[in-house]
Structures are given as structure tokens and as C-alpha cells.
Image 1 (cartoon, rainbow, N blue to C red):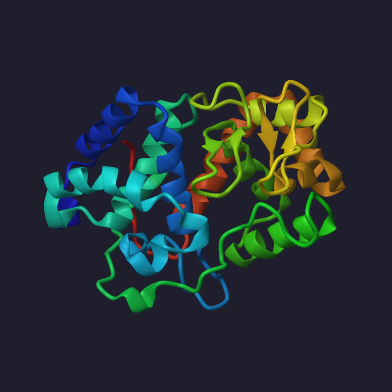
Image 2: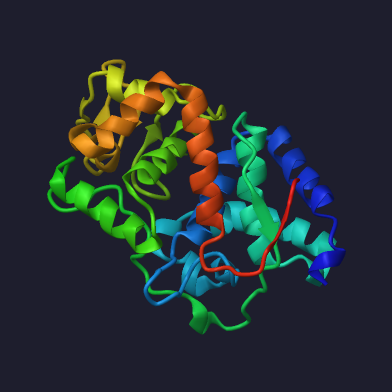
Length: 275
């Protein structure tokens, strides 16, 4: 049963994986986030409760490109070690919590007790996760509307949208997964507020290349997506970009709260523990 699992030991195994290869950390955060971000507050469907990301019907969604051969397969060995008591749904979300902490981020509240679905029919329709660009190519009002529609469906407000976007301090885009290319920051395995300081302080221009519309800095080493740049353009979003650029502690506090909320979407009756 779930109560018999030593979640501290599970967390230690995940942390060891990240310590051996810190680049795995951001991908595990993506696994946790995409497992949870399908929630619809009106229909009460989706979210992290059922562990459906392990089904081909879900991991083959466009937004999940690359996860099957990376984060999902990395977790299979750990799942095998702990057996049926550990649900995939708990494992995938715990992986995100451990990754945030391992890369220098805040403690994120987490609870166990999700029970895996055995039915791929529980997979929600493709299109519930945010896209990098909406409407015409480049950042514009349609991207702000898209973010508010997608995150609003989950129950998030403007401040939480910006706080969650700060996870782009970590990792990079891969042409083989999203089609986009490059890191947002020069420290892609360090959880900090660099995403906000770079977004607001550097000059971002359209990259000339044969891939999708993305922005680059003058040094051509960093990138931003249209849904990143729109956080600057939109006054209500930009207020929080500036606040988090000035105060890393505030960002970490607000991120921890928003990420904990994200990971619990669609769940009920979880047992909260410190790992």
C-alpha cells in the first residue's frame, strides 16, 4: 500500500539520479508539470491524480515530445524498485519536487496517495498544455490570452502564471522535442530568478533560422519563446516579472506555492509529508 512506501528513500533515489546528471533535473520538472497541467476545473478532469502520462495516448501529445525516452523511462527503474505501493502518479510529481530542491530551488509541499488509472480512456484530449506561440508568429496579445485561457482553466491567476513561468530558469529547448532551440539562461541547472532578470534586462530580437519564431539575445547564446516575451508586453504580467527580477526570495516563495498547487490538481485526500 502507499502508506508502506518510504518516500524519503524514493526521493533520495531521484536526487541521486540528478546529482549524477544535473541536466536530468529540468526534464523531471517538465514531467511533473505536464502530468499535472491537464487539469480542467470545470469538468474536474485531468491533473496528476491518475498517472496517465505513462500511457502512449498521453505521452504522444505534441507538448510531451521527448518525455517517453527520457524522464518516463528514467522513472521506470525507481518504480520497479518500490513496486505496486508506489504509484506512477506519486512518482512523477515527487520527481518534480525533488528536482526543484536538487537544483537549488525551494521546498515544495507534496503529498502521496494518488492511485494510478489502468484505463487509457482517462487520458485527457491533446491541447490542454500551453503552447510556445499562439496566433500570429511572435509575441502579441493572442499569447497573453492563450496563457490566461490555459492556466485559468486550471485555476491559476496572473501572478501564479508568471511565477510558474520562472521555471524556465532551468533547462533548454530541443529541436528534437519542441522544435525550439537553446537555453533561457546561462545556468540551466540552477534554480534562480535569472529568467526574470534576463527577460527584462536584455534586448531580445527575432532569431533568423529555419526553425519556429523565437527570440535571441545579442550574444546569440540564449533564447526566449513568444509566450515568454509576452510577459513583458502585458502590463499585468510585467508587474510580476519586475517583482521577481528584483527579489529572488519572493519568486522562490511564490513558485513553491504555485508549483505545489499545480502538482495537487485533480487529487483529493493526499497525505502531506516532508521529503
